[in-house]
Image (tube, rainbow, N blue to C red; front, side, top):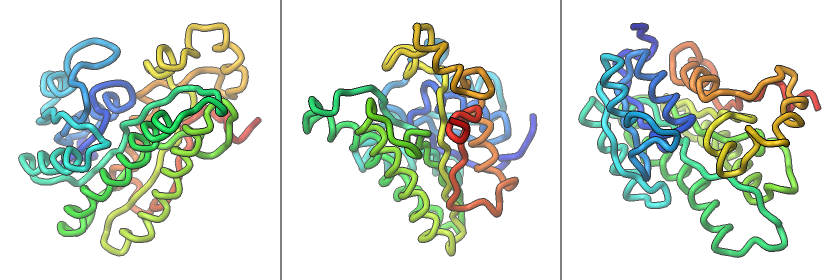
Length: 257
């Protein structure tokens, strides 16, 4: 087992499924103990529970904490759970929702729900972890944004707004926390093959897939493991001088259209 994250403890929101599940497994393979903080324990894509899979396939310790990221108390409980393993050193604010919309028909409840999950959850997840990290002398916070946080799209106005907020929150957090040894960075995934793009807003496996792939220079959709490898870089000492940065993981789509 490689040990890029030896002696680290990571809390990952939305860690049961998709990108969060891949990040959790990747971190564990590099020596980190893991707290899976999610509103549901079972992976949306099926298979073994993520925390049980980690303990079966690695030497890392892992636990699950039920966590609704719109509830500040739940986020604080998730970070508190990391104390069992020695205290949080890496926080990944990954939980989020994604769907298309017709702007003129969006109601206040739908708007609030996406803002609460995608923005409030990141804000207070980072805050809960940062309190412990500052006290301990440092840490790393990774916020999962999206290419939708870099460009506007008429089909995803609320989603773009939330992910743009995550991008600027990341920069501001880095400015605030950097002097205390806490690095804060964002990852902006493009088209990644998860249940979000196969079920929530179907792209993969539909007629739209071919058009999307033509817009990507790498000519493929990303996999959760692509996001996980990027998160590993940001969580490890390999990125020790990377702070307040956005890393785009989209096969070249955003900057070549």
